[in-house]
Amino acid sequence: MPPDILDYRRPEAELLFRRIGITFAVYGEADAQERLIPFDMLPRILSAGEWDALRRGALKMGLISMDSTMRSNLGVGMPIDILVARRDVCDAEVSYRIEPGVPYFHDLRECWSAALRAAHMAIPRPPYGPDAEITIYASAGGGSDD
Image 1: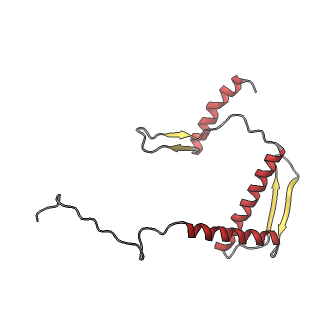
Image 2 (image 1 turned 90 degrees about the vertical axis):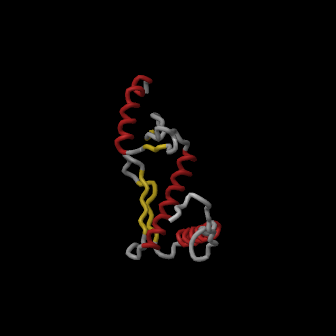
Image 3 (image 1 turned 120 degrees about the vertical axis):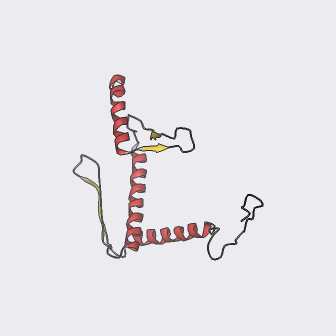
């Protein structure tokens, strides 16, 4: 794509990003104005191996999300139907139904549960609550003489 077309399209993309809220602010700076999330006008080109790793990672995260949804909402349950398709392509890359008892999904649930328990145990207890030590701070002066 010629550079002049990229120069023309960048302001359009920035306007769209601002309109839909793809921004962030750095609080503590004097102006703390919203900034655009950095982006490239040119798409990333991935090798087949890189795409496969991303696709598999996204699929795994989708299954973890479904597991979390099923655990928190008893109205959601098995089976899980998976369909992975590329945009503008009529054929599915992956089409699969996970029924109750599928070993991979069972193992994923167990591994994720164990990882969450380990993370929970590794996070320190809050400094407030029924078992917290309470420190009382006293200050001298500055009070009224009432």
